Length: 361
Image (cartoon, rainbow, N blue to C red; front, side, top):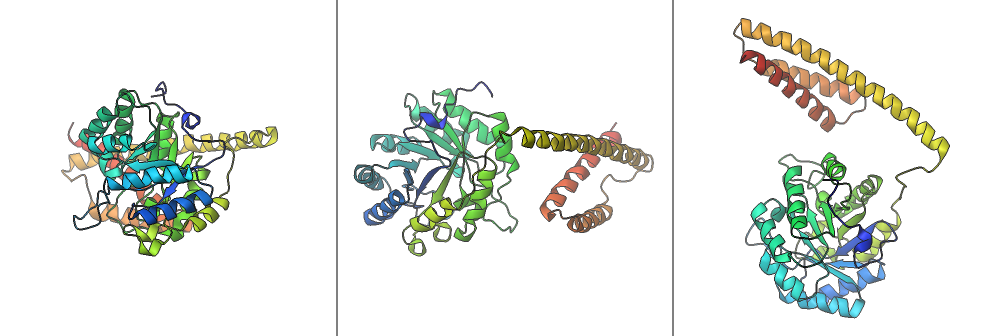
């Protein structure tokens, strides 16, 4: 993946001399007046790119599903009056055709579309020969290969100004946020596609305007290149996703409060200190692997004993006890429940895999 020709944000039709690059505007284009008011507010906030949803794929059919193609005329007016770069979501070839015809500058593919390779390929084919920036939201399910596949389909038709949008992943669990960030997935995406710029979508991750600042800050701490945030002049009256939108004035304040850090220290003393600490981390990681190896050896011994005595691999009562004690001990040591839960479930699954291999040999 490291040899993919993905151009940097500096190739986009916008000044990217400052970080983050921000895309903002209402979840949905509702009326011409609402769109123009929002665009003027975004312009006043110093944000260069205006977004508005024209077509809105919704979970239930009776929800507001977007104003449709006439909203593209409003985006044209935004560009003419304010000079802002415009962006909108496309979900099929017809959307692409209409958006390109209206002169929309940047397109993005939503989470519900990314999950469908047929739809992504249709969009890619419609974009063949068009040099336009396209952002790809992560699929609603935590599937890195699916996310990468969508980007690869677009790249295969000649698009090189590509970026990813991290908007979190759907979960049946009730969490603090609307969508689970699962930060390790975009981190892995960046490792495998290092040239690919990544934007964070705090609006869809949190679903709550009061939580936007903490997620936006974390994305900056992880060195994301940009933010895409929903902003409405009257959020409480928004026709869709009212709870997660904030006013342009509040958005300007959020951006002003972000702490931006450099990826490298550029100081010999600091670099040396970090090097020593990272060496300690490497040693601990090696010891962790050795401990896990020893644990799996015991699990294998148990597997042989179970096979000899015709005992099932899974012991639900025992597993429940392990998880309960681990959660309790982990909490005392300052670890989050989510971390301990994920860690010990992964360890337990590997133990089961090792024992099943013995049972079936």
